[in-house]
Every structure is written in structure tokens, then in C-alpha cells.
Image 1: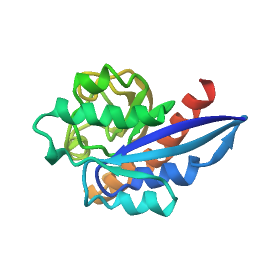
Image 2 (image 1 turned 90 degrees about the vertical axis):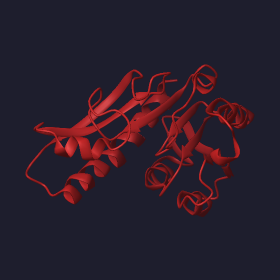
Image 3 (image 1 turned 30 degrees about the vertical axis):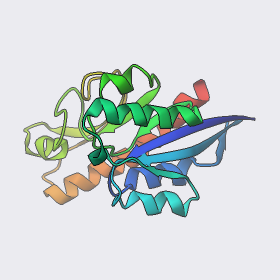
Length: 192
């Protein structure tokens, strides 16, 4: 049985983090055990901290406010990740734009975005998608690259719109995230 180690980066509520913990942490798939060995947040007040601790997972707080530049922050972040030598780094609501210091050192990192990329990159993607005239909406799992929300698309999932309120629309987006992200993570680690 081989062990596949993950580090998860998050900034806020930790709902995607908790979903990944529930579905993958310490679970076995095709002779491979997946374990989240560490979580890192840039926000000392993130609610995800308690969610990680509930599962007995180490949480490191690296507050971005203590650094004078993105590059300086990313240097410390990269060192912390490399200490545990993960097979995969998973961004789960990590609200930081990563610099080339991160992307040139951490090659196997993925992110989930709440729109059908390449549409609606960056912040407020759910709102932009909701306000668009598109008949479908969805989520994208992609590789982390130098350019924001522009890495190789690994998978997408969508739904047909049906005159939902914004709250209903947002809920559907999150449901897709909770379904798709663990599946993509599992597939990547099993194939490795």
C-alpha cells in the first residue's frame, strides 16, 4: 500500500477542505492511501482551521499580512510545503494570487474555480456567471500556473440554468465543487 500525501491551502470557511477531508482523508483507493498531511492558511481567523483540527490534521498559519511582498510570502509557503514533500498541493478557497516563486517550485498543484473557465476568471466568478446570459454554469478544476485561473483544465462539471435565485445558483455551484474536486484529486493520485 503506497501513501499519497496532500497539502491543502485555504483562506476561509473551509467547506471544500472539509469535503475533501470527509471523502479522501485516510481512505484507500486501488491500493493507495490518501492522507492530508498538512493544511496551510493565510488567515488566522479562517473557520477552516477548526475543520482541519476536527480531523486531527496539522494546521499552519502563515499570515500574509506579516510579509512585504507576494514573493516573500510565497518563499515561506514553498518551504513549508516542501518540508512534508506532498504528492499534490490542493488549493481549496485559497484567496491569494501566487507568484512565480510558488509556481516554479511547486509543480503539482491544482485549484477549483467556480465557473467554466476560461470564462469569469478571478474574484466574483459566481456573481459574474450568474449575471451572464449563458444557459449553463459550472466549475473547473485546473492546474495552478503563473497566470491566474489559466492552468491546464483537468475537468469541468456544469448544470443547465433554470431561473434560479442567486442563492440557489450559488448552492448548485458549491454542490458541483463538492462532487468534482475529490474525484479529480483521487484520479490524479491513483494514476501517479
